[in-house]
Length: 77
Ligand SMILES: [Zn+2]
Image (tube, rainbow, N blue to C red; front, side, top):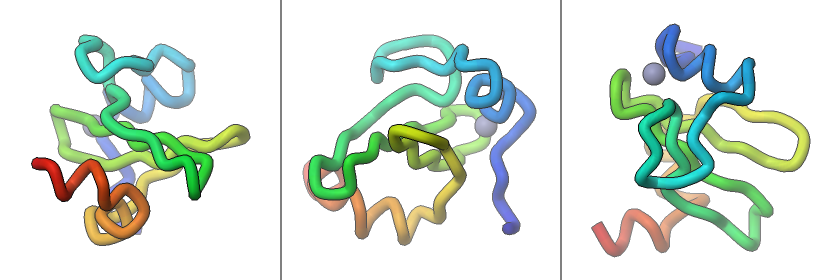
């Protein structure tokens, strides 16, 4: 995987210190939800990585994947 996030957002994910809210200062901050995918989209404002969170784990996805899964979020930007 070419984009696995930066040190800051990887630390946020692995330590659980990411932001659960869009306005949070921690990285990666939550920006959207998908009810269908039962997942949340988090975005690192430092490196631009998109993280998909679900009940069990979190991983970096491409912007293309993010747009497919969380299309409602991207369509209102
Ligand atoms: Zn990052």
